Every structure is written in structure tokens, then in C-alpha cells.
Length: 104
Image (cartoon, rainbow, N blue to C red; front, top):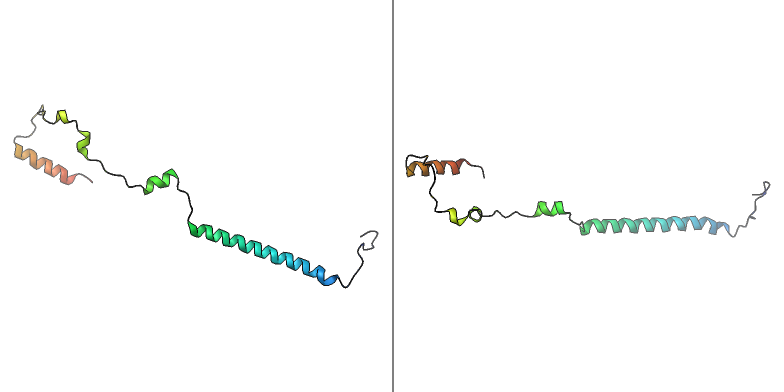
């Protein structure tokens, strides 16, 4: 607008086209947003979440190693330095109670 006079002349034949362009733009924007929402939904459904080291460690089942691997074989036949039990039967009873009471 220059000095209060509109620069475009009024043309009744262009009026419907002028009203239609914003509608088309709005429709295109809605379609683009809808397509983006669908892509996000598909990404959520596909579960392509990459695991971190922490999550992999949580999922991994830790294998319990046998305690025999930790004992040296050459010390297996060594006699104890002290005899703390009066008899072998008392020792067996005490050790069985010990294994029953220990936590898993």
C-alpha cells in the first residue's frame, strides 16, 4: 500500500484462487505432519533401540563358576595344622550345619 492506495488491483476472477492457495498449503502441511507421525509410530513399533553396555550387562546371565577351579590341586592332600574338632563325626556335623545356614 502506497499513500493509502492498494498496489494490487481487485480482480474478481483471482479471488477464489487466492482463497484456495492457503487451503492447499494447510492440507499439504497436515499431510506432512501425518506422515511424520506415522514414521514415528513405526519407529516405536520396530523397537530398534540400541542396547548400551549397562543394559546388556543386566540382560546377561552370569554363569556361576565351580569353586573347585579356585583351589590349587597341590594343597588338596595337606593335613590341617590344628585339630579343632574332637572327632571326625563332630567335624562332619559342624560342616553340614554350616552349609545349611549359609546364604545362597
